[in-house]
Length: 372
Image 1 (cartoon, helix red, strand yellow):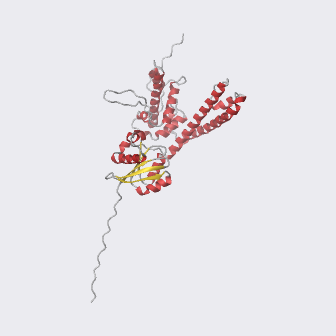
Image 2 (cartoon, rainbow, N blue to C red):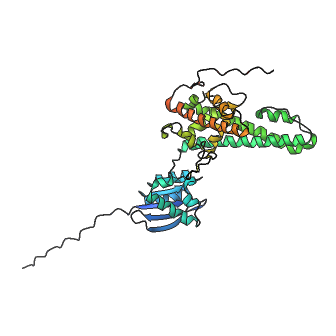
Image 3 (cartoon, rainbow, N blue to C red):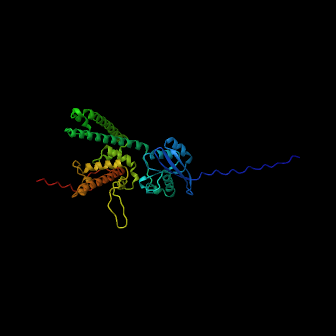
């Protein structure tokens, strides 16, 4: 008789467990970046390594860390790095580098230590990193157009000043004129001895003028076709196509601010504070946020408070703050007008209301008495 055999069932397969939650700190460098990986549960350092700074390498390296959290510092390369990390499934926090005194003032500051500190700050409390949000790729590209225009304008101004100075040293004065017409007028004032030195620069000024005009046409096209809200902002006195477009691109979303007055602090146009006990000294403005937009707003405020600015609420505000004061009072008045201008632009953009230049003014400005 054949014996009956019993089959033993195979051992149960253990269920697949999810990989342990990990927290990454990435200290961005120019060519390579230091990475520190922590266990989110225990805070133990799991691994350290360096990664090459290229989109393909970043995506291939961190693909295995899908679902993890990562912290990087805001910087020149943080926009594309954050997009690459998010593309492969990481949750990315971009830290405000100006707020990380624990890193910037560390006595043992190295890339390796910075990466670990970023990871530990993210693991303990994300608010300690003062996270920021990068603008979209399209907004970034259009903002770079404005910055390129600004670089061309500053380069032209530098070269015009050089030509004027060289001619003045030779006893020649070029008449005052618009920067766009300088290359035509200066050509007729070049002494023979200075032609080899200055004619190439005058030609460079001509080329820069043509470049700036092309940028201006592109700015107008973007304002009319892509960002129609700039037309509403341009109703404010002193705000032109460049300033309105820069404002829209930098702020990106007006709903990110609960109150319009918060925009002044976001752009660094409010005084800093250093209160300690009974001491609360008056400090300069923080100059936080986007320096380019802040400079444009200050330039607009200078026009508003200047001799050609029309009567409006902002102009009267500047006049009140600058009355009976010297140059410092006037500078403070200009900054205050720039801050109120930023708030006004946000209110108009977020509410869609029509700009009233005499808002809050019931009586006309009294005429100045005639000079004796």
